[in-house]
Length: 613
Image 1 (cartoon, rainbow, N blue to C red):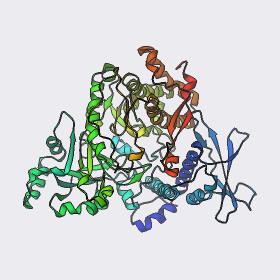
Image 2: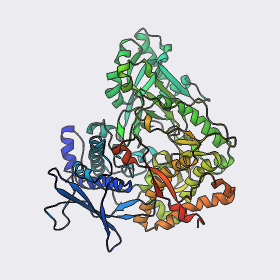
Image 3: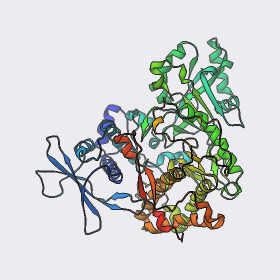
Image 4: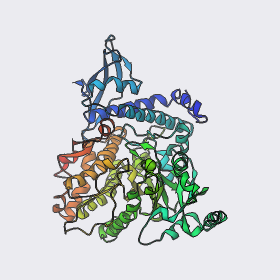
């Protein structure tokens, strides 16, 4: 077997399935799928406790001829929110007529799903869609792993490099790399793991056809001129004038190259024909994709803004569009959150929390599309600009995505190994937890604000690997706050709700609510149940850190905070509750979202409610 260099798409898939990266990719996808199915109680099974304490299970399914077929594996139940971790042995498939031994290793994900339908607790409404997403996850996971074997990363790595170095993607969602819409060559060009760089396609669009959104401290004209530079703007203006158009009536909108080919050209040609839209071509700075794919880092000047572009692929649970509400709310929420941090001495002066403001955005007016294509076009043409973390860094500080904390390198060592060895595991962990948890719980306790702080939305600011503070990003897409009740500061005004045309609108919860448990769970689900629980298991596996010790360490900043600010701060948002509700991501994708899909899980902090040491 050999590593993969993607050249021709026709040869690419054959090279992938014969590469040495394919078997571990397949095992990872199957393991993550099975862990999710079990954790969300989606399948019936028989079990027994083995001598080593693992729980051995048998799932009885049905093959195409109606005969019983058995799938067997073993897992351990963890303290960390009751998560399940399969042992190192693979999933075995055993036909009824072959009862000797374990059977053979399960290798076909679609066959596995087909044969266990009879064991599912509910009808899988979206089995075909789900199967496509998980099989595409397998292919793209194997492609990324194989590419990394051929092109190992080394040397000094800045934030934009690390965004692609982390190949693990979502640590829980089984469709963590589906990217439906990307062919293999698209994935190699625009997937973050491949470290590609590209220019954006720029359009001139009549201003009357657009909705603009900017922060209070800037104007759209100044913003777009700063992004493009005087020379590029002058070239664009000349092109418009050569076509006899009034340049002052137009502005410039960036489009992801894939989006241009797949969505904009097929849908917006009518506006080009009428002279309301002009294609200016690939121009300006080069960008590389971040882990979210649609957010891009500027590779010509790291002090310049990141840009978030609409891209109509499905990844994990959502289409990666930019709804009008997302664009217009971004500066409003950014300004509001900035004002809160600026007015809070603890957040601003002591913790030095960084908010990466999304301070400008533009969206097409989708009501201008004809009715039959309006839904297909919604959210496809727009952009948001976000501050670079580098404008906030002080001397000696560096930045890394939080997801890199759980990244395992090609040598089998965690990315953080040199940091841990230099600082000492417990000292490093205590500093990380204090730097990350204190601002998040203060926002919650003091201001009634919960941030969706999974790994992609957090940036760790450190000095030679020693954690010092954090930056928060994706502000409009990841915030919940408590309804004004007279005790808290005023809430942002003029926020738009999700449009019914948005394909994800039915699963979007309101940002503002008086349900304090929803607000608390929003933070705990993303930061503790996903991010910290994954880190806990990495530290257990690679450094022997007991789960109980980890969660004692995680409780310590909370207890320290409450001893400083008063126990009454915890009365509304109980982080030590016995259980919390978290989203059932796999149930939603396979069974549908016509009902609420959450479940209560054991909170490891409950055992640490009396002391944090």
